[in-house]
Image (tube, rainbow, N blue to C red; front, side, top):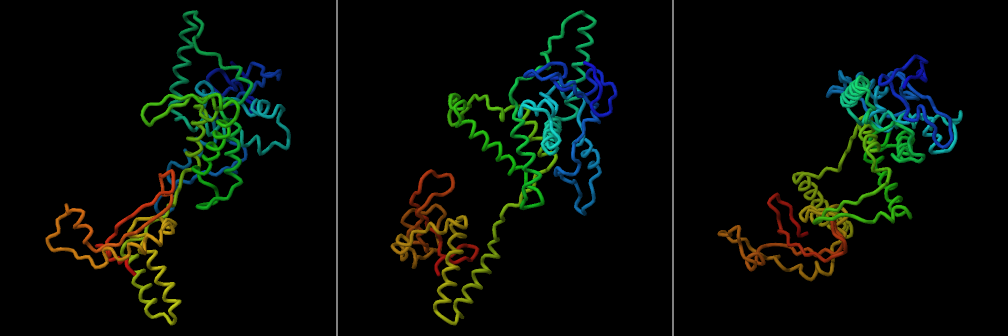
Length: 375
């Protein structure tokens, strides 16, 4: 293949640029696209629109590899069309929408280009270069030998979206329009949910229902599928997307025991000095709730699963318990019943459970860290 670059019009020879796999073939009656680029000419459209993580050190200084990283994400890699299913934006528009690119398709066209570049970034540049070099050497040897190369033809591609480009465009567009919570843009783990949703839609479709067969061994299951979101191209796209945007999470952190003890001490002090009994009772309820979820290792909302009837039924058990001086770590059930404790009764659906079940937990009246459960 030889052609003129779609941007600079310079000559691009075989294996030295990026060729659309429909370069010299027609799909669905459309004329050949004849699209080819030098690797530096195939660049991101709409610079600055798409979020890109900035690498900085602890002091906020730009990391020394940032410029090289941006260049890698901004432009293509020559020979990428030989190791990934690459189609130009024009061919994708014809495939997805059945028409050529119109003037009002600026953002759509930019998202298609960005998805292609992210898919290229999902493979290491060294890997693409190595494959390109071996393919080029093999073609030269076949030419010397007079042998037809055994590589599969590069086109034409199927006349439907077999790699998931449609969903990739949805993800790219959401990344530039949705508002993030941690920073100005949404995180990659949020964008990945679009793939999960689209996969469920496919699995529940008439076509997906016919693929209900699976191979199982133990608790593992393998289910063959023709869903385009499970393609290698889409996996490369997600890797490139994360490489470009980065991934940042700010999980909720647990309160230290020292801090919780201080909070409970202050609540108890305010309750004892409350002007009215109603105000004091409310403070005691808050303190008891915090002590409950802390000592029982419950998530915040799970404290509301407490069964008050069961709690009142067993409230006296373990109230006057005594810890013997010669208590062994391997004590019996009878010895455990005589220790100071509180019987906490819970009813609800906890994490990793399928149904609402009844649970009884025995917790020490006062933990080693000094948190008292009985209020």
